[in-house]
Each structure stands twice: as C-alpha cells, then as structure tokens.
Image (cartoon, rainbow, N blue to C red; front, side, top):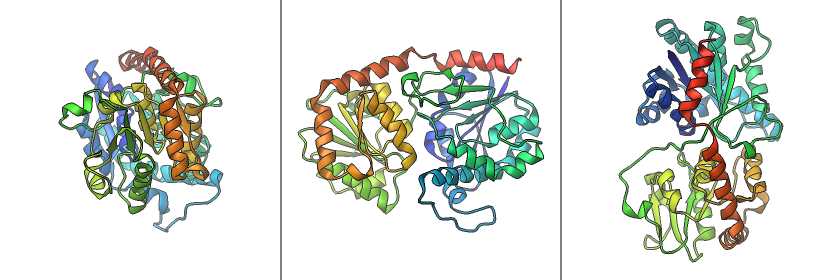
Length: 378
C-alpha cells in the first residue's frame, strides 16, 4: 500500500508524524513524505523518503498574500487565529501543483496530513482516497480551520465543496486527559513517541545528576534577536537556584547566551534523552516540547509566548503536572517563585508521572498502522 504523509513548515510538524510513517515502512508499506523545501533536511534526518513541494517558507505564507502584498498580524486573538489559518491555506495552495504531479506519478492509497496541512484533504478528495488527520501536539483551535477555509475558497469551489473535506480518521497523540473538551471526534489515540534531531551523546546527558537538573529551552527554531532575549530572560530567572542548569538551544544561539560556562551547559541536546534526567523544564509552551516532557514524566514551568499556546498549557497545569504563567505574570520574580514551587512540591512530579503512564497505555504506531490498512482497504 502507498501512504503519502504531508508535513508543515516547522521541525515539530516533521517529528510528530514520523513514528507513524516509520511504522508504516516497517510494516512493508511504501511511504513518501511531502514537505516544503526548508523541512527536507529534517525529514531526511529521521530517515524518511521526501519529496519537496514548495520553495515557500511558512513565514512567507503567513505575512504575505498570494499576490505578495505584506500582511500585518492582527491584535484581536480571534482574528489572529483566522489570520494563521489563512497563512496555512496559502501554504496548502502553493503545495497543490507539486502534490498533483506527485500523485500522477505515484498514486497514493491514503493521505496523512498534519493538523494544519490543508493540502492533504484537498488532494485526498481530488484523487478519491481516504484522508487521515494527524495531530502535531495537544491540539489546535478551530478558528484556524475557519481561516483556512476562507483562503482556500477557490480550490474548494473547484472541487464542488463549500467547506473543508471531512476527515476519515483522526489520529491523536495528545493524552486523552489533556484534550480540549470541545475537540471534534471520534479520535484514534496513539502513543506519543518523541522524535528530534540527534547528536553524539556525552555521558552527562543520560547520567542522573547529583543536584536537581533544570532544562531551559525556547524550542529548536530560536534565531531572531527577540527570541534570544526571551531565552536569556528564562535563563536569568532561574540562574540563582541551587540546581544544575542546562539550556537546550541551537549551537549558534547557545554561544550568544550570557551564562557562566562553569554553571550552565548550553547547546544542541536531544530532549528525549536529556529530559529523562531532569526534575523540571522551563519553556515556551511548544506542543512537541510539552509532550516530550510529559513522556519523560517531568514537571513543567510553561511561559507561552504565542496566544494559541495558552489553552493547551493551561490544561497541563489543570492536570497538576505544570504551572503556566500568562504574559502578564512573567516577571523574573514570578518565574523564579514558580520554579521553586514546582521543585519543592512532590505533587507536580507525581502528576507528570501519571501522565507518562497514561501515554504509555495508548496504542503504539504499529497498532495504528493496522487501522490505516483497514481504512484504505475499505
């Protein structure tokens, strides 16, 4: 059977479906992954055969319309979600010509697309095969779908549709207890399996430390000056705690941090390995980072810097496995106090480990491949 997987425009959108794609290959199926050019190094790094489908970047699709006119990010939170959806819609529209050419040469029996990969349902509808929607993390607000449908109105009209095509199967890697109450269903649960870029490991990365180890990160795509300042602020807020500090960041960013090298380790460190030795992670609230921490049973101090990240972060906090500080509570003193609370209260560790156990109980990727087989065979 031929399975086509579509990614988005960030590494997280590659790593989330990689376990299912790899499991499908191991089961003997033909698998191709369609990605924008800038994500090809990431799909190749996890060993998946990749077809580039657009030279455009996610940032370019977000902040320019189809005619190249610059767009400003709205201040209103609801309109901002629709703005994001329209950007993902432009990404889908730009990908469709290459996807159609791919399908003409290599006809898929099933298409799997990430949460916001809107080209996936359109292509599946065009070629008449099932569409599987695969969550990237803890879920996306429905307002993004609305914006994408608006942007893709011409493509939908050409298919005789007045809305986005339906989903034949929804594969969800979010633990059931952390899903949004209004999440559409039904869902096929799948165990979250952490994927990230690897490097040669040093013993300290997997060895239990003498003091509590705290990881600080702002994700894998930190590059701009404001993002570096954000990461520096996170580090400064916990720098004087009696802990061992590790900053997980791209090497170039790590070199730009102001930190005592005798007290703080910084650089590209595989989170799936490092977090098994940590007592706390302080981070930006990214979905893959949050799930990797939960999979390791590590409590989290969440400082979301994008509004749509706040609800998933608050669900982890409501579960008792984290503390979330919204934008108006992110002073250094409040960050430090929150970190101290998590380190000092055993309940956070207990709840994080309870979620880890819940993740372990979900069906593995190999089991879900069997569902894909049944779906494709009708």
